[in-house]
Length: 114
Picture 1 (spheres, helix red, strand yellow):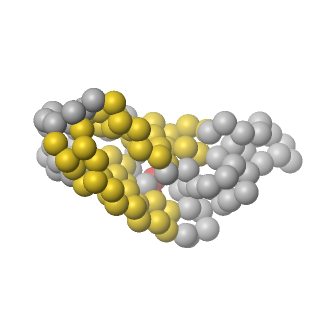
Picture 2 (cartoon, helix red, strand yellow; picture 1 turned 30 degrees about the horizontal axis):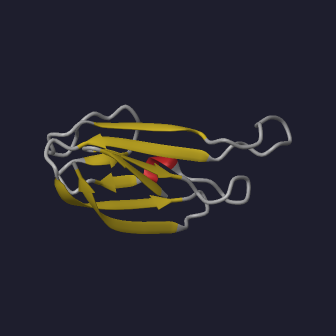
């Protein structure tokens, strides 16, 4: 899990560990709370959602890794959630996700923006 901040924008990227060595992120189970009333998760292309005024976009795509194909492992899924805060401040970001093996994780961090 990585957080990247630029001004009032935040990007949260979620994957299931080292490529080709894990069961893979179950993309629909990833949830992100941004601390301003908005959330990202469950699907893709979500804008806003949850009561916050900032815009949220979600993308899930194969990560960098070995090519998929017959007899080869597929690339890991990396889910990236991007959010733009409307006001500067310190927010609590909460991320939870599950992989295909059923393992779960929960992550919280305070982030200062803008």
